[in-house]
Image 1: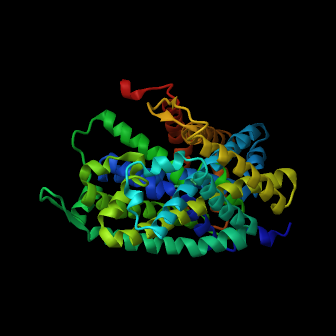
Image 2: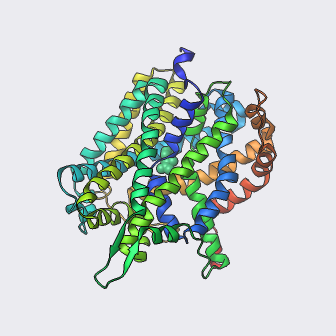
Image 3: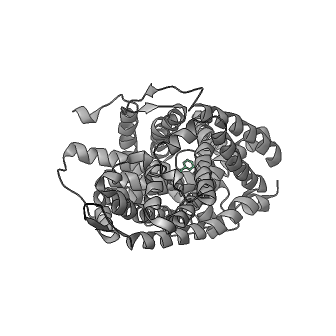
Length: 467
Ligand code: PHE
């Protein structure tokens, strides 16, 4: 295969593509609602510390493994240590599971774009709109198909002409759009029927001011765990994606500074999303609206756009467009990882592997859609929630496999091959790696312990909250 065709053209291409993977529904939907739930500024502060420590360690590990071995997860772990080949398979399982439902969520976003295009959004703001859509039999499948077709098309174009080119256009545009909506959100103000007026700037304070009110050790732990699981998901680490992207990075790229830029981009977008969503929800729905949890995007936000009056339709449209782009670049990275691993495994062309993975994605995504009607079930999960098919896939990949993979990777790198294997790769052109010592310490001692606790807790084997 032509080496030149295979990789990113340079540092910026890599950073934007990796940021494209990292910035997704997690940043725009999950981060703001966790933040609202977990005491605003307190969550922000903890999250920031975790990004600079854990996030950086996990991201560095993945990208350096990819670039050094020039292989995808399936073979990269075997190249690191023959006995650890199984870890490659375990890692490969994560995008295999995520692929089944990510395009379904992408389809939901497209549905809202369609709703704001053809109507003024009154219908989307009604109670029951979302539920009646996802439980219907045909519509979710049609929208999912459109989203999947876009994804497959980008992946089919290849690394440089597809993923990189696409991310170079989308990512700066997304950033601009999010800043515009965030500024708009801060200028909002609304008076309730009872005469109380709430402004966007008050909402800003709620967002960034740490709320230590009634803070107990148990509550602190809860916030810490939320922030930790958000971090995994948000940076797309421990699922082979960053190993695949790392394998496309040229040897002369400064990994350390690229990693800083990716972290900054991902965290910046998450922060700005909060800035865009929290003040708006606060202004129109008050503090009660902010506690709405996962339903924030699809249930509460359409109500906020509706309450804005005429302009709400355009803000809603812009918001869901942005969310669709963010989801698309993430879904592309999941599919690319599957295609790239299979190309390497079966020595087949991109075209034929895109077809195979495309069919796999299609069939499994249809099943996930059916999970809300004919395949509906309610499965209790350790966290106390009940899961349908989509939540179950999400639970196995994010709460179960990802901490487990990170735990095993940290043992492999920290104790078997040694952290130097990674730090050497980062500094191989004589680059300055200011956090090298922090890296070695974290990967040997901190990451394994915390991942073990996280794994035991998310599987329900350990319940610190009852202690
Ligand atoms: N990192 C993405 C986000 O924050 C989510 C994602 C998870 C993307 C897994 C790809 C794979 O939304």
